[in-house]
Image 1 (cartoon, rainbow, N blue to C red):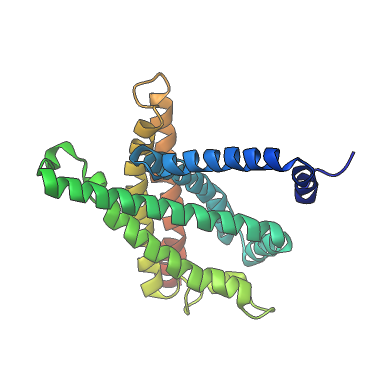
Image 2 (image 1 turned 30 degrees about the vertical axis):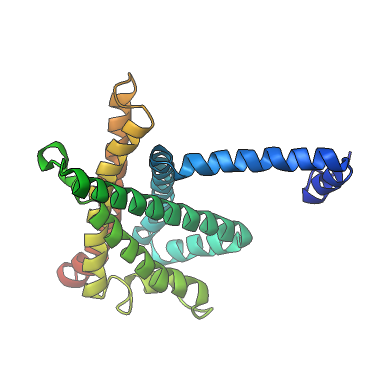
Length: 253
């Protein structure tokens, strides 16, 4: 049996009569346009935001798990990072999809915010009493989080991937250049993660409504699960700069 890869499908496609090739391309184009129309609609953008937001939230669990090795020892954290780097191409693929998820989430959120803002200006029907504070500030917290992510990639990620071969990844994170021994980065990290938790609180409420979970028998379990993501996971991240940036430096020193 021939391998089921791209060349195999190209061979099958080119072996079809011209008329069937045209029909096949037309059907594929029609499917693509249908998906495009769905994703560019208001509900489509909300679904895209909900799904990408949930996927990024689950990534946070994995990311926190790795960061907690900082509390074990320098060798444990360095060994963990080395194991990730050993995966090489697989990690690059994962990072590519994470970037796509972040950009899709941010782009959809920006479009929805702009559309809602235009609707508010046209109708004047906006009511602060009917809108949660987290929803009103979702665009602001989202923008701040995006700035934090760019900073995070330009510091930790860049140094991990392009720093000296003999460097200690542990020292990068807890050091005073871009790490938590630098008060500016420690405070910035704490504020950004706190905003992330605030953003996620609204995000999980909105995602539950968009995906039809609110009002079902699963709503209670969903709310309990969401608390883990918007409160406990961010608290775990915040504990790292608090411990290495302040407790270790000023209390235990």
